[in-house]
Image (cartoon, rainbow over all chains, first blue to last red; front, side):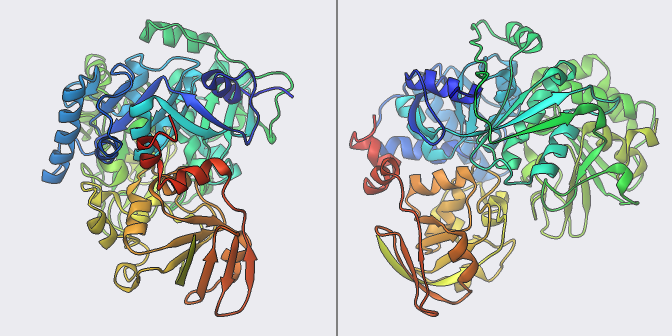
Length: 420
Length: 164
């Protein structure tokens, strides 16, 4: 019986020739990540363990992105705690205001993750790096502390679902539509405890931004990780961003998958997840007029340059609807600068949108765009749970940057074709 | 491990954003987190929960964010055990790691009603409903997990060298 991509990476990092689903393994980690919300709890646990130093100062990273730049005094204290810890431990990859970006956009950009790595992060969207052919999963703060202390984490080897992608995306359809379509099909616990493995000829039409967005939302189907087969697009990305050599793991021909889904990319339409679960999906041609008050374009899911480009092209020369607040958040400083140089930021501002410094801010109802009672937002973020972006009686509609941009112009949930 | 408590019951897909909303994540103080536990789906929870109460819920309990503040808030509010039809995986790990007892049982989670009194014997894998007299068997934790729990959580396990 063969192994899946995920199982091969776990076996290699556990020093084993072979693992099978259900087996408990202790895995050597290539990177341990935390942010300004989860790291303080981990730092406390680290001290309680009685450890003096982290296992490897190059392999622990902290990114101040959730409530940074500090939204209030308590947030400032939490960032200070991280800053002091990383200073004392001489952590190489500590990213504070000025260098930071949204963690899951920042780490691949900085080349901190390459194909074949095993990564944990005290943030549920750590599964993003599966786009690079790495095993990467979200954990809590205690696991992060343990990872910082000994460079290891325990896992139950997951079984897997296979997603065989074929065909090519239609214009103005992107990775977000694909992953929302998949979550709509399998449900928010459709991949619970499992890995989601993406393979097939269809990969060729998916950019790295599409893949990062899709792997990012594997957690919204309950998955332990999402992982993409490595191809030339992956290799080119890794080479451009990192000096480290990628290690490519391919699933065995006789690897066992609980189920195989064949997804024809050419059949996917503009997909929107209605409140209050990412599985409540509809396509824009199935919905009537739904007026909105806010649009958020950003987050670890859709704050990359390709996302801003797609939004800017749709918004170019148009105006944000009068009653709509449109907030654009480039995910990293590098993306911000590049978007400025390419004129996207000018487009957004002339259109009537605001552009923020990188932050997770509104996605989790932190700050920078909180919703009032009864308000509706179209957001390129990843969760539309009750109260996620503000008031418990507000609503979030998850969508692609293309749909979000078009909706900002019309003031209701709209397909890009309505404004082009 | 044995506990007896009164049941507070919720539905499917209870996410970590409603267990502890992100607007309170600017602190990791256990008592403060507990005072806001569940407030976005149940404003009465924090005031009515008693030490030892048992939380029962449906499928995919604890889905969403990896915030350990969620099991911490539940534990600090006095809940001694969470019984659900299934748990989201990060919440499951976090609960074990911080020492919040959790049990998966679709059968028990269906049958047990709000206000029932439950006695749980986790060593033998038995949940007894004192109110209705029904018993439900549950799968005990695997040995690896038991080691962590017996050591009082992951922090203690590393401290005393039982995992290295």
